[in-house]
Amino acid sequence: INQLPELSRILANATQAGLALRMAISLAADEMESPAGDELEKVAQQLAVGTPLDDALAELAERLPSRELVVLVTTLVLANRAGGTVVSSLRNLTETLEQRKETRREVRTQLSQVSMTAYAVPVIGFGSLLLIDNMQPGALDRMTGSPLGQGAVVVACALYVLGFAVIRRFSKIDV
Image (cartoon, rainbow, N blue to C red; front, side, top):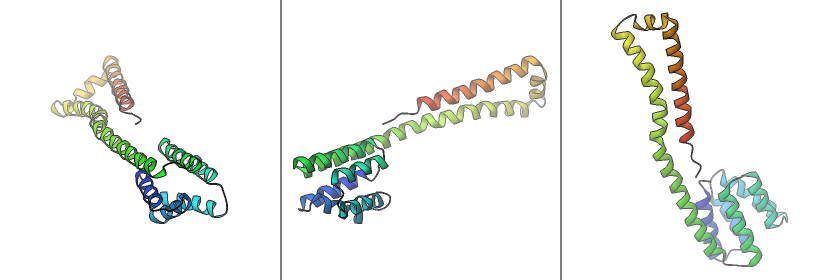
């Protein structure tokens, strides 16, 4: 997915230079690093033995389920069938894919603080218990020595686990 903007750019440049889409895919397979280069090599080999472009690209989309890849494949198939402006479609798609990549990076950066909070809250709670026991030796033993203290510790642990789970759940955003 991270290589899709570069793939789209290579395909746009190759088709703008006058190469057929089949040759542009072969060129991209040679130019791209793994894993995109390997996957495009499979498509190029299928095209070389006579597989229709639509089928080869559809198989690629099945192997690598991704919304962005499906959009790229659909754009290529439609442009190939209709004989439309492949170059402008690919340039627009490249720009869109780069914007999505940047948005995904920004969201991940913004959520890193939330993720750290999810880990910090339980650590601070358990650290506080150990600090109290260190400041007043035996305080933890007295607290967990009674059923009421044991219940309080169990409830506190459960709340920390629940808080961790809720924070992690809220920080999962699909872009």
